[in-house]
Image 1 (cartoon, protein in one colour):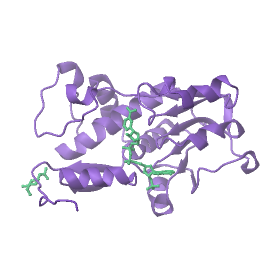
Image 2 (image 1 turned 120 degrees about the horizontal axis):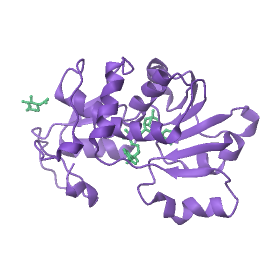
Image 3 (image 1 turned 135 degrees about the vertical axis):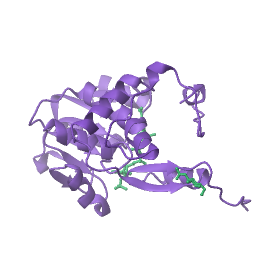
Length: 239
Ligand SMILES: NC(=O)c1ccc[n+]([C@@H]2O[C@H](COP(=O)([O-])OP(=O)(O)OC[C@H]3O[C@@H](n4cnc5c(N)ncnc54)[C@H](OP(=O)(O)O)[C@@H]3O)[C@@H](O)[C@H]2O)c1
Ligand SMILES: *[C@@H]1O[C@H](CO)[C@@H](O)[C@H](O)[C@H]1NC(C)=O
C-alpha cells in the first residue's frame, strides 16, 4: 500500500516500502508469497476489522453476503473458527465452496422477507446491496449491526445510507467498515492460520494487470485475484 491507495489511485508493484507498523510476519503453514498476500493483505485485514466490529458470541447467527469473494472466502472461514452459525449468500456455482469454507446454510438470493423466518444477529454485506439493507428490519435483530464494506470510508455520510436511518425507513444501524493497512490486523489474520481456521486459500486466477482489472470489474471473482506484474497482455486499441 502506498499514498496512491489513500488517494484512491491504487498501486500494483513488485516492491513497496512500508512503515514497520504496517507489516506482519508470515505464519508457518503459508506456502508462498502470493498466498501470504491473499490471506494477510486486504482480505484478511478487512475480515479482522469486520469481526472486531461485529463482536459476535458463539452460536450467534451472522449472514454473509458475497461469501465466495476475495474478502468473503477469508471472513467465512474465520466466522466458522469463531463457532457462529453462518448463512452465506453467493451464486449457485459457489454453494459447495462456501459450505466447505464453513457456511451452515446457503441462500441463493438476497431477497429475503419476514415470511422466510430468518433472523440474524449481524449482516456482513460484502457486495453493497442496498435492498438487503432497506429490507433488513424483517430479518436483522433490532440491536444487530449491518456491516458494509462497499460504501467506503465516508459511507456513513452518503445521503442514501443515512437518510433511510434518520427517516425511520430502516431502523437498523448501518455500519460502514473500512480497513487501512495495519500490521495489527495482518498479525490477527496470521493467528487464524496458526489456529488452523484457514483451511483453504481460494485463488480466482493469476492475471496480467489488465485482465485482473477486467475480472475485478465483473464483481464475480471467486476468492482472490492475483496480479503478476511481469505478465503482459498484448496492447489493444479499443475501436
Ligand atoms: N472497506 C474496505 O476496507 C474494503 C476492503 C476490501 C474490499 N472492499 C470492497 O468490498 C467489495 C467486495 O470486495 P471483494 O474483494 O470481496 O470482491 P470480489 O472478490 O469481487 O467478490 C465479490 C463477491 O460478491 C458476490 N456477488 C457479486 N454480486 C452479487 C450479488 N448481486 N449478490 C450476492 N453476491 C454477489 C460474488 O459471488 P458470486 O459470483 O458467487 O455470486 C463474489 O463472491 C468491493 O466493493 C470492494 O471494493 C472494501
Ligand atoms: C510471473 O510471471 C513470470 C513470467 O511468466 C514468471 O516467470 C514468474 O514466475 C511469475 N511469478 C509468480 C509469482 O507467479
